[in-house]
Image (tube, rainbow, N blue to C red):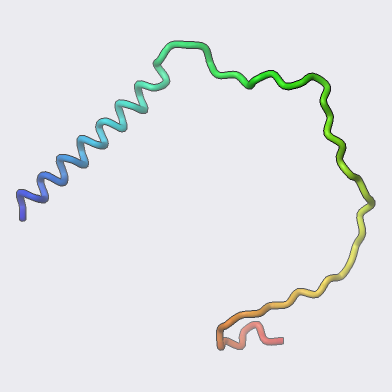
Length: 72
């Protein structure tokens, strides 16, 4: 049983080391930084606009519990 535990610990430590190497190694790669693709210039999407209304709306609390905490 102790031998199996050591194997699992070794595999976990190895996987952690590989992830650490990958994280440290990725930013050091050369090349140009990524940029966004140029979009069509001046394209505007129409958006509907309306006036704001203030209303009182009912809020119903429904549940399947037998607690009476929220009972009105």
